[in-house]
Length: 388
Ligand SMILES: Cc1cc2nc3c(=O)[nH]c(=O)nc-3n(C[C@H](O)[C@H](O)[C@H](O)COP(=O)(O)OP(=O)(O)OC[C@H]3O[C@@H](n4cnc5c(N)ncnc54)[C@H](O)[C@@H]3O)c2cc1C
Image 1 (cartoon, rainbow, N blue to C red):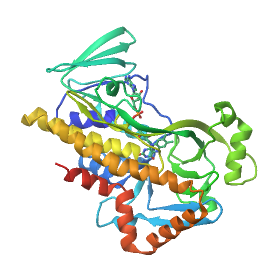
Image 2 (cartoon, protein in one colour):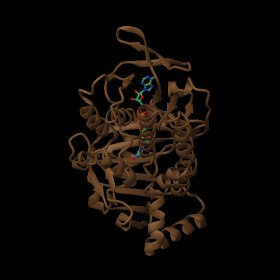
Image 3 (cartoon, rainbow, N blue to C red):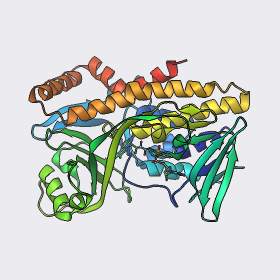
Image 4 (cartoon, rainbow, N blue to C red):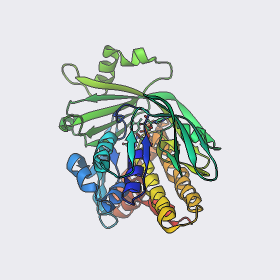
């Protein structure tokens, strides 16, 4: 989120400093799905051709049952009259950061400072002061505004007078990465696979060598330790249980994520704002969290531009809060909570009804259009922009 925010400030000629705690761009296997509105926003600033060069285009995705097989095939081309990009793009978040970092090189009066961890933030009527741990010792950075794009545990948010209410799921999500080609078994590039015992999400991203890496996401039991979960035999048993094949799976990443559903009670406190996971966190089913955060960054940078160049009222920052926080509650939280509930549904009658609904949706172009307008995040953007 930080790089998108900075890129949009830079193209408006607004100086910025990125303070990043890590010594490199965080390249954990997390977000990999980009939805149509995000591609539209990046297209408006000339970045989408670079994303398309590196990503995999997904025209359709599958909803499956682990035992019954394919339930519904969602064809995104029904959105062709709504967006220039009627598809999902699979490209990892850190690669978006690399592209933006390269575009930001040589931006005047601006800096990207790695190994700079914010420990405290203060503000007064004129500006903000960040206390920062750096390789050269503690330093203070000053500015007119600060946008916390510092993730779920945001220090900037903790310095604001806001709550981060919601809940944390008891189970963690295990993500395994392999080069094994699941397409040979009829899977699409993106698949949501329901099961009352052990659901699964399976998708293909370009990976380190851009030749394709498959990620498999499983829920875990609350009582399983990290050591048990990462044990080679346990990992092989879990993935073989999902898709039996001869020989072992070559696995090059195993990651465990705690999953939450939370939204900040306000995205603005004076001269401090939050965007991305610092403002809202949710489970990854549907691939929405990063996209939503990118939409925050485009929205907020545009408003900061109006304040900087046109002397617009600071009240615009409250509009940012109203627009983005409302849709985080109405769309992001609601949809992702529903996605998890559906994929793990234990009640056979409820599950059968859900599958019947999905089949009815894909059988009707009108229903499919209206469903995909919501889950492809187009409706949420239009709703946000309608808020005054
Ligand atoms: C398994 C999984 C799959 C997912 N898939 C998708 C998907 O397909 N599509 C999607 O839209 N979303 C997805 N998400 C969600 C997505 O990954 C997050 O919403 C997104 O990464 C949030 O980005 P961010 O920039 O807000 O926060 P982060 O990526 O967490 O970045 C925060 C940055 O702030 C830095 N930082 C933290 N504290 C400080 C500090 N005190 N001082 C300075 N720097 C600091 C960190 O080092 C980090 O670089 C997925 C999540 C998971 C777990």
